[in-house]
Image (cartoon, rainbow over all chains, first blue to last red; front, side):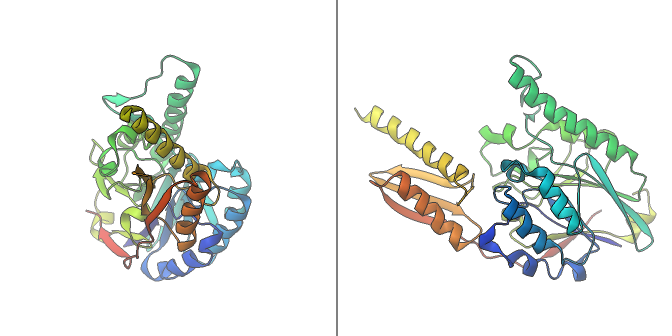
Length: 244
Length: 86
């Protein structure tokens, strides 16, 4: 059994100091790993980076994160990543982390991802340089995700994102803003490389459960969606001993 | 003309949403903002009472002429639960 706790969009600021350390106090009992699906902070300031690092340093299980758009707002990404890593949080941007748990191996491939929209209602790599840059940024991150996922040879593979790979977990949000909430490039990357689970946040008014067109389960773990400190996803021994 | 009055309200509502997104006391992108009959209604969920009060303070600074109805909530959390992946 591998047990993965996950939550996104915890948006730590000075006003919630200590709150998340308390909420995550049971993770080490409930799970083997903690995955954070971006937007760890409210505005990405250095003070918030310090606060969130302190909230996370006592979690007691290996912790892996991607950043979100709020974490980029303050333009202190390098400092934030360094502070989180000092707190024991592995921060992925088109990177991977692998762990051996209970005789099995789990691999996490992570990227913030970005927007662009979904088939039939998405931006194209065409026109003004700014539009091309927007679409190409997402494509570049999706390509990085695909390479990293494909390279994982673990029993369980999880894609960790901030932006959504599918529209299904955005239901509840206004359709007009879907292109700012995710991109099908991410789902296409996941379906090509294969994965057992894709996690994302970002869409606070979205819904929890979805799947890629290729059938990979997608879960929106944004804290306002799950309305819990975290969710736990269990991969049982029957699955681990099968074809995964 | 009532049309231009509503147009002004539409822009003003959006300026409030922008302020709530950008002001470092709040930085919330998902707050519902509605202006009607000289009253401004805020709705949605935020993470703390301090953020709830800060949102109202930001709006009050931007719109001192409006009566503000702060319907923002700090929702309670359920305990963690688990799903077994098939």
